[in-house]
Image (cartoon, rainbow, N blue to C red; front, side, top):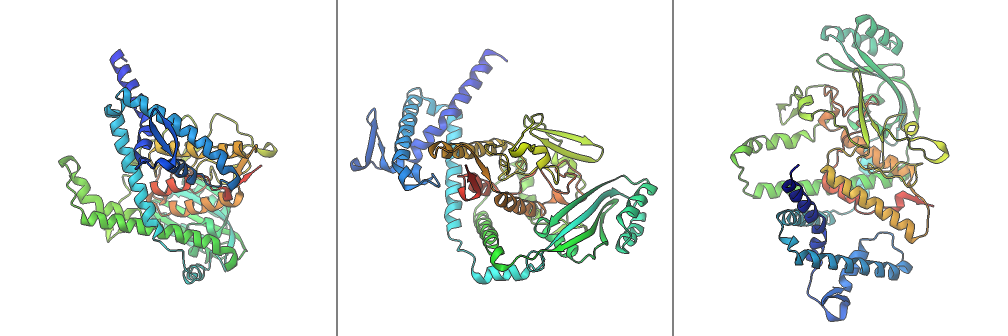
Length: 482
């Protein structure tokens, strides 16, 4: 690398480092009220309004903590103002990299503010809507069951699939199916798991619930087959009162999502969008691409608005496996998997390693960064944080989330913080349900997103604004502080 290149890179990095302080000064600027002045830095006022703005973003702050927190915030604002002054004196705000970062941050802040504003118009789910969802999904609630499943993913000649389907649907046991695979020379992999109803994709739950114990079903696409046996099931109904909070949360999220998507669609319809020649293909494919996210995984060919969606190019479009500092991709035959936190050994409470915690159904995390039983552990680029948001942005919001958790420990003079089991599974149930609707979850899509446990431990199915809401501030109702 030449000296010029080093200087240019250093300048760009420095410009990016101070742009946040510059943006804060611009965003919190307002007409000064002398009676609201908290301090002056070289003649520039820092107001009580600015302090209150920061304090309002501190969730879980108790009344008796307000005064001390306010003093700390004021010192932070003074430090930021000093940085802004120095940056402006050195013309850092005029550097191209800083201007580009400021513009991008401004756009993001405004977009988020608009999303927040429109989300506020969504009323809480009505009792009628909650009852309707409960009654409309009996296999999730009133007729909820816990299933033990034996599954096989195999490659079988198409002319042999009817024979396999007849065997499975006639109730031939899994052992005979395995023997049949071996006799046919068909490569396969098997897994057994215990899954409550809410952890089975909604598109498959009704069909699974209708399978008698000891029987199974076969889904196929070309020569790829997915065999699912129900080896046992146990009644475990959820009452309306127990399910109500989770239903309300789900309906509220879905309501905000629909409003946001509807608003964006209306804005696109009303706007005049002219594509440069090299991006003209987007104008033609945009409508088709928008529909693919709503397609649920099925064994039949995928269609969107009557148009066949081919998965022939899935591997190429999804790209090659990526390696990172905190994760390692390994592949054995046709069973790719991600080993997170490699090569570290992470030991939680009672000497349990994180590998043992994840042994049952693979890597999971609350908000992609926390795991029950592992206090004071936050992961960057953890499970299900690929996609949804630019990696650097994802890392940033996770880091800020972790810092706010640490701050809470320091202010309250506590030693440990961890996520509750309930919050951990609530988030993962929502994540798995959303992931099940994505094209990469289709059994015909062979990619490193899919684990041996029948789920994606890699991909994040949420939109950027949802991720930002999840990680904007810790929800201490979901956490246990010791």
